[in-house]
Image 1 (tube, rainbow, N blue to C red):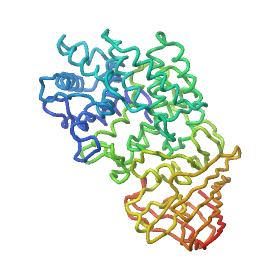
Image 2 (image 1 turned 90 degrees about the horizontal axis):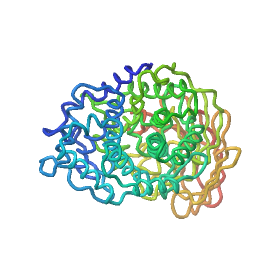
Image 3 (image 1 turned 180 degrees about the vertical axis):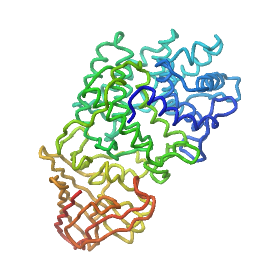
Image 4 (image 1 turned 90 degrees about the vertical axis):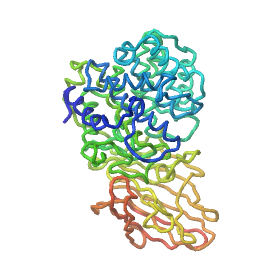
Amino acid sequence: MLNSKQDYINCLTRILEPLKGCYSKGKAYMKCGETGVLYGQEAALIEAFARPLWGLAPLWGGGEEISDFDRIYLEGIINGTDPESEEYWGKIGNIDQKQVETAPMGLALVLAPEKVWEPLTAEQKKNFKNWLWQMNEVRSSDNNWNFFSVLVNLGLKNVGEEYDAEKIRYAVSRFDSFYRGDGWYCDGNTEQIDYYIAFAIHFYALIYAKVMEKDDPEHSRIFKERAMLFAQDFIYWFADDGSALAFGRSLTYRFAQVCFWSACIFAGIEPFPMGVMKGIISRNLEYWLNKPIFDNGGVLTVGYEYPNLNMAEEYNAFGSPYWALKTFLILALDENHSFFKAEPLPLPELAPLRVVKGARMVLQRKDGHVFALTSGQWLEWGTMHVAEKYSKFAYSSKYAFSIPRTYCKIEGAGTDSMLTFIKDGMCHIRRKCLEWRIEDDGTIYSRWSPFAGVEVETCLIPTAEGHIRKHTINSDADYTAYDCAFAEKDGAVKISGGEEYEIVCVPNTNLKLIECNIKAVKYEIKKGINRLETITEY
């Protein structure tokens, strides 16, 4: 298991070394794949250049280096910010992907100015500052993006340059407005409550809390207190084997799942004993590094537990997965820090059932695995496969979830953990809930409609072995419906209620398994009121 600081450095080295041949002539761009993306190829090339800095900046700040990468990044910054260079990164626009990639550059100025600032000439410093300063003149998405300009301004402040204190205050106030209590935020004015709360909002807030301890002690304290509360729920997202709950968007960031714990340690807070947090981080990294997530050249792929463009969002470019390197924030710590001296410990004893209203989830633990019953989340802006990523009845660390390749047949529709109606040869599922609530005993109620003419009321009732689904269906006609369990391969799931049915899934629909089956109960829905009960055991 990863233990010493050198172990973590070796881990980062293994991830970064294959990229050395991917940089452009002037080192300002990096191309490590051939896939398309929403924001175009130029921004994708800048993103791929910038994201390794999430690991390199802490590495350098902690007094270490990986051969040649300091030279590569110094040259890249010089050429990328020089308006006369052929590799100039150009103008940063409103709600522009380039904004995202300024954040690790700001972090590098905070943690490692001796690598990315001090070697620059006066003219080169001016160019770098001017390019970053654009962040103070543009509009960002009103969500976690607000903090990209904070990291930039903290970086400029750290190297003695002009910075925009008002931009910092504004972003901090926006984060305050997103706070929902008990440690939970929303990622802007949205129903979205997922990993972005951990690996974006809390992550950036904790960096701020550490860097601004003296200048803004009040928000430093508040951000740390909120993280301490959040940790009490978030620990339930992790399984004994190092895996974590597969839920929501941006899962191609993989081991960014644990960067929240790295940020806690960086900020100097211990919501759990150091060995427990070290165990979470170490097991998660090892879990991922033992999966086929790299291509045959050693480059991280888009996908989850194997390369899979089908599950990707429209904003996942070839360099996007290197956002996972946020977890290496711990490398900013001295090798004698208590984190590196602690023995990795197993998870503490956790309750078999935890109602987390802040995440609109009921979390279950069984045999060391995580299961989440959910209702009520929806992304109005509708990223790829939004229903499958947010609206299933249940999610898990053990089974992961599936996404569709077609709705024209149930074998390709990714219908695990859903009640699926067949109409005119098409599969229809729960999407946005019309109404929902979570009871204190863990029962989740939702009212939803797969299409006009059918309305469903569903109660999810957790049990010691799994959960019960009770559906009341008011239908305008006769339909066939399938109540589906998790996608699996080892036959561990049990499901009962009506006519047993097994769906042999189209390959590459599940995030974990290339090939899988889904056990289901087949129901014949009649016009009028129908009452169904399906029992699922994990």
